[in-house]
Image (cartoon, rainbow, N blue to C red; front, top):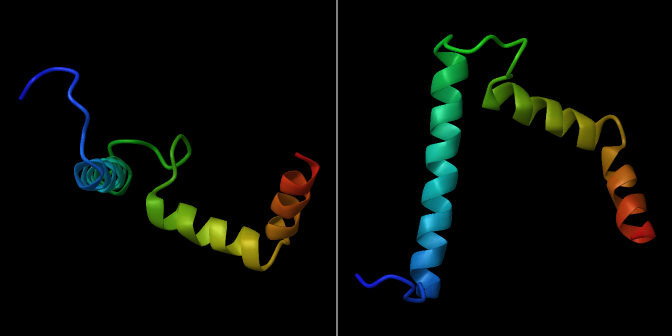
Amino acid sequence: MRPLQPVSPGARTALGIAFFVVFVALWAAATLGGLVSKTFLADPLTMVRSGWDLLVNQGFAKDIAMTVWRV
């Protein structure tokens, strides 16, 4: 391995997915394991439920569309 060598597209994708998986796993371990208070940082499952509620029931998709249209 030499420094400053370009990373292949396949490796870039694999590293991106691996980072995401490790990040969510650490986040889940910290919050669901009780290391961090839910008042300070919600767990991933709660965030997915809240995000779904925002998009489906509270019209957040319209807000996103209006912001994208303005930009």
